[in-house]
Image (cartoon, rainbow over all chains, first blue to last red; front, side, top):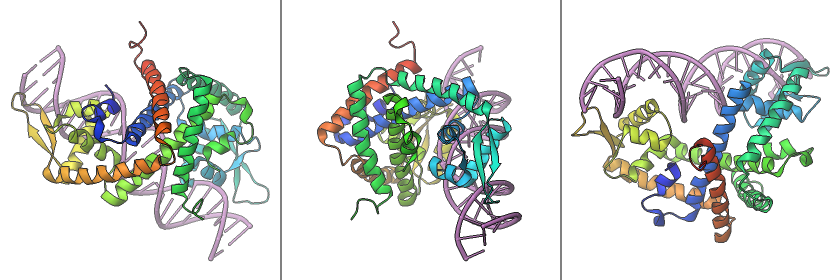
Length: 165
Length: 165
DNA sequence: TATTGTTATACTCTATAACTATA
DNA sequence: TATAGTTATAGAGTATAACAATA
């Protein structure tokens, strides 16, 4: 029996369905994320933030500035510096001076980094496909659509200016 | 544009739907969890693990032993000691000696802790209901069912002995 | 010997804020 | 003044391992 089952095991009736849904979603996300983190660590000796940063760079062949990475990864600048430092030490990314602004740097994948990311992304995709392998194509589409509504609602809470009129 | 949109913004076609679904689920869970953490901190000066521990105790009026809490919260024993210490310092829970085993203690909510948890759980329920307020009753049930299939599959990965025959 | 619980330690991840260099 | 980036620090959250008391 897991956390969700236990929390609701004795008196489910008094909880609204929304609460049961939330606990289940949280359990799903945690189970998959924990698996992904463990596999990134065991198979590639890396972490989710490092993988995430490399994924951003893989989408931007010309590289990204630190503040762009910060915005896209939704973490503050100091953390991006730290994650970038680790990847630089591993030879997977490098900082390139920006000609027009001597304060700024673009971070780009090295050849080695691009090759490794390609391999990691490939594996990662397999893990995720496996995680949803019990769902049909149609069920995946339904889940995606319903979660889209949840996401839009949560975003409107986080950013009240949107959708408030 | 958020992380999900950006990661897929330029070349969506090369990603399987499973990957898009996973990013969306992760975004949803993070948005809601971040909101819950912030509100627990701002309105009740507490954290998610402390709330979680109290929730476990609220379901077990006779209290729970440390190792039971550890198992149910899915964290290791040392952490339960720390979380419990914080709640004891706040007067919300207390350690009660177990008659038959002088090594063990049960942790129980104090009267004050039970009252406060009741208030917090009430608020928390409202936040979650709000988070899913754009979904119909039927859509909530569908989401719950589909995530149940994902959860069962992830559990079978985590615990291969189950469901392998 | 095994178990209950505590203590100590370390690591990841994150935020805030002070700071440097440049714009 | 404002911005790009770094550094320093703090705190949440977690795991591991050594340990004391008891079974």
